[in-house]
Length: 289
Image 1 (cartoon, rainbow, N blue to C red):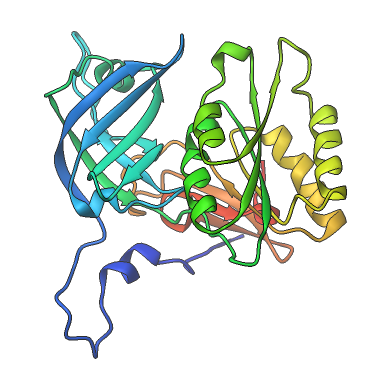
Image 2: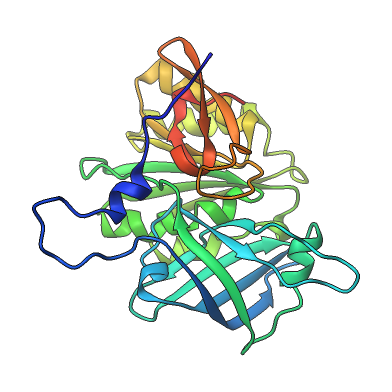
């Protein structure tokens, strides 16, 4: 087992070529962002929008931020909380997050109101990559993956790539990002546990149909190991590329603490990679559940 040190994208992005005379620009910032909105989307998820700097608003699909959450009464969350990017607009200089209240940190986030400030650090990590040759991709998300995949809709439209999004949830009312994808021209296929349509077998049937119709040049996924394994099998069978955004607990978010190390299969060898630094987006076929 070996530790893979092959990716240093954040550092490289922040360091200009030696021959360049252009002024240095940071690629990551830690700043107090002003809250624009913090509203409920459904019974589980909340939508946080903040005003921020140009650097933060330049975040790409698949990247994430580390948020320093306010302290709810009687609790003191110490570490920053990783939060995947839900949206970024460099024109309005805003970033958006979709979060679920599950612990002390997100309970603190739930308390903030428009006009308050929240300490954000980012954008962090390596995001999704879209090949200009891809004419149609498939995005598959469940749970937090529905938020992580959201910026892909805008990026794919700018790339001239069509999207079919298969979104999974326990119940129809818990699906998020559906309207966002539709507004960017994507076809959305909802599947839910309540309707007994979210099982791997049914999702594989849908995917095989899309492949047969020439509507799957690549897979993009987040949020479900079961559905990831389905895509891995199909990717091997049909020779398709894919990318997966991995979920993992993090402490520092910048690769120093090695809290988020996971195993990956690279050419038959099991290697360790840090999700925050080498990812969170990885090659689909190298990811292990």
